Amino acid sequence: MQRYRYNSMLRKALLVDIEAARELMIEIGLEEGFTSHNTILISELVDQLLNELEEITSTD
Image (cartoon, rainbow, N blue to C red):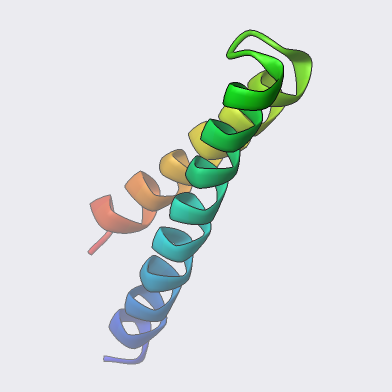
């Protein structure tokens, strides 16, 4: 039960972080271009967060 509660809280935190990073990526992409270095860095961060979310979700 404790593990489920931890995973649930972690999942919610990851979803918030993913949405914030996604919004930032779009904003930077519109300002600097979607192939700018900063946009790509944020895109990589979004990918990492999504991978973490997938790992958490697959262990439930």
